[in-house]
Amino acid sequence: MTSINQILFDKSQQLIPGGVNSPVRAFRSVGGTPIFFKRGLGSKLWDVDGKQYIDYINSWGPMIVGHAHPEVIKAVQQVAENSLSFGAPTGLELEMAELINKLVPSMEQVRLVSSGTEATMSAIRVARGFTGRNKIVKFEGCYHGHADALLVKAGSGLLTFGEPSSAGVPAEVAAHTLTLEYNNTQELRDLFGKIGSEIACVIIEPVVGNMNLIVPHMEFLKTLRELCTQHGSVLIFDEVMTGFRVHLGGAQALYDIKPDMTTLGKVIGGGLPVGAFGGRKDIMSCLAPLGAVYQAGTLSGNPVAVTAGLKTLELIQAPNFHDKLAAQTKKLVDGLKAAAQEAGVVFNAQHVGGMFGLYFSENCPSSFAEIMQSDKAAFNVFFHAMLDAGIYLGPSAFEAGFVSAAHTDEDIANTVEIAKKAFQAVKAS
Ligand code: HOZ
Image (cartoon, rainbow, N blue to C red; front, side, top):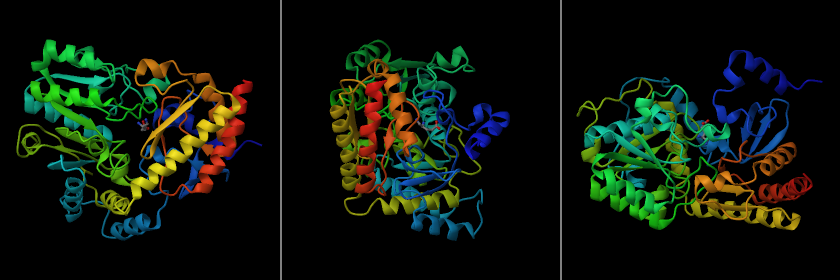
């Protein structure tokens, strides 16, 4: 009998390009049919056919306290009764700005938007307006949303399809985007040495989560900070993924490096659409209505979305929240490494806080070139063996994974048990 899932996917493909509203969901890299979900609770998801999964995507990061957390749901229900949107200021937005400033003090001023893409696109416009320069620098394999200027040698869904740059972006627009290798300090020095005075900004994922998980070298991050300061370029940390996840204060707190601007998304909305960008007051003052850089949004600071974010941020300020999250993620990573070793499969894994990377390679990669050398075919066998047994991982060898506070010891132990069989399937493939 055809499953409800298959019926929905077949119909969706008639009306929605590829049957999905975001390409990373399409399973194109791993093959097979994307799972259509109906319900989530804590660490678990249930698909439309009633099958249960342990979720390691967590909506790509936002569900850090688990699905349908009762306090988040209650707060959203209560605020929704006062209207879903005003298109005018609310006290909730101020509360959010104060909280962001408290948790991420480099964000002296902040503006709320509705997605990570909006946040990065707007931050770049502000950086260009502030410096009066056009050139921007990004790193190969980093993904900063789908604004034209940023879809150059990008990660995430573009990597899944082996096309790191997008059609539809005029060459003239892409020409202002310069791309360097992640963790390559010499390339950075060389570029700044040549054209430092022309660089408006450098945007970076301080821990990369869009070409699997890549950890920064400290020397690389420190040099980046120094060069931006020397040359008057704005350093933008894209903490859409890492913000409130790798540490309460984001990667900038974890590594003690202060960017000029920061972009946020995912956790800040607790599962509803919220993004934010902010930073030094002198830079943010360039924004309309104070300055000449225009940026706007009908639903920016939406009261329901902001409430979900505020409640989530309240919950993650509980004592030792991030230590526990990191410890649980470590258990998963260590368990998977041991299971792979037992099965004799070439595999490695690592985590930063509640984010993890799984690699079918000897070492943990530190650049785009290295991650491209990992064994994608082995990942695909592993992915499907895990999925069949009810473990929901990112459907691509180039995505990071996410653990939530709702993942129990039992969840981790079950996952590792299932992985033992999945690694055997890899070995036999
Ligand atoms: N960028 C996220 C994963 N790498 C998820 C957002 C999306 O593209 O759907």
